[in-house]
Length: 283
Image 1 (tube, rainbow, N blue to C red):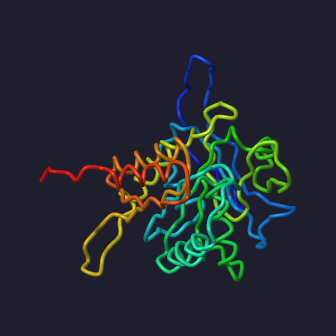
Image 2 (image 1 turned 90 degrees about the horizontal axis):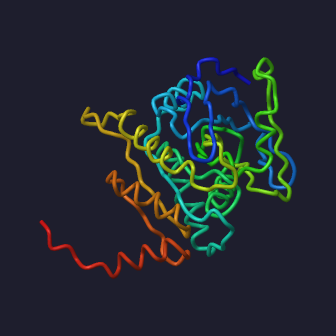
C-alpha cells in the first residue's frame, strides 16, 4: 500500500477536567484486512486514519483527494441512525439496496455513515456488498466516520512501529466483539479520537463540518457553465440522541433531511413532531 507522508499535524494540545491529551502528527493510518465471518468478499482493503475532533477539514480534503485519490463526488448522501441492532423491513432494505446504493453509483455520489457494523451502518454495508458484482473499488465510495474509543480491536490499528507503516495492514477479525466493530463493506474510515473510551458521538460535529466543507469547497460546474456547490442530503433512520443532534446540525446548515418514519425511536419522534407542527405563518 502507499505511504501517506504529508498528512498534516492535527490539533494543538487540549486540556479537559477529566484528562490531558497532547495531540501530535498522526501516525495511525493504513489499510485494514477484514477476516472471518462477515468479511468483505473483495480483496481491496479499506483505508483508515485516526484524527482528533479539532482536525482542520481542509487537511481532510487533502487526505481524501490527494492521498486517497478519491474522485470529486457529484452528490453527498449522509446516512445517520441507530448505532444498535434494529430490524428494517424488507421494503426499506430494498430501498437501500436498489435506491440509495444504485443512486450513488449512477450519480457518482459518496455515502457517509458512522462506519460501524451495527444498526443502520450495517444495513448500508450489506447493501453495498449486495450491489457489488466485482471488486471495482470506485463503484461505491462508502466513508465511515466513527468514534475511535468505541471500537473493538482498535489497538491493532496502532500497534506498529511508524517505520513499518508503509507495508502495514491491520487484520480485524469479524467475530463476537467486546465493543463495536467496523463494517467490512465500507471503503474508507475516518476515526475520531478525543481520548475517551466507550463514549458515542465524538465524531458528530467534525462529520458535519467535513460534509459542509466537501459540499462548499469542492464545487461543480453545471451544463450552463455555472459553478455550484456539491449537493448534500441527510437520511435519518431510527437512532437516538446523536441522530437528533446530527439532524439538527444538518438543518442549521440548510441541508435537506429525509426522515424515514416507522423505523423507530428518534426518527419516529422527529417525524411525529413534524406532522404535528403548526404551519408557519411567516413569509
